[in-house]
Amino acid sequence: MAASPDLGSQIGNFTLPGGVLDGDTFVRRDYRLDERRGHPLVLAFYPGDDTTVCTKQMCSYSSGLESFTELGAEVWGVSPQDVDSHEAFARKYDLRFPLLADTDRDVAKAFGIAAPGIGLRRSVFLIAPDGTLHWKHVALLGATFQSVDTLSRELAGLKTA
Image (spheres, rainbow, N blue to C red):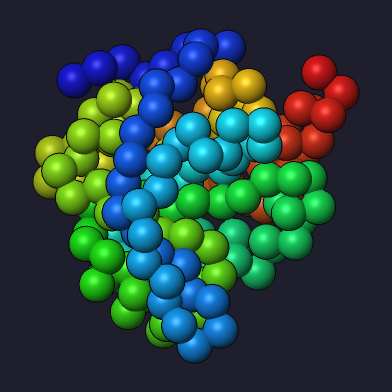
């Protein structure tokens, strides 16, 4: 397994299938990291759809979405479940940001966060507009997650950096 990328390092492009709830329609498409070039991205890896902590985390980020969009950022949730699972999860909790399916855990492996048993470690990576890693948090235990306030504060630092 690869090591987690270092701060300031260029993040390699990847493509994953996913979807986003837009009104009543779940719009499916492939998401490419390089499509966010020029804009910050919150890449939130979570172990599973519709599980206790993951649901709290994704609902928190969905409720706080305006905090991210005001800073020009988009949030992408990434987990090992397939797009059908993501659609059910998004509909159940009205999640309004893209959920991507890393079913083979190739992207999780590239970020150094693949984990036996749970699939991946709960982690957040803030990708700067130039495609470099600005900030990261890789959880040792999956029981907690980074708050909207913490992530917004780090994103705001991109404006002054």
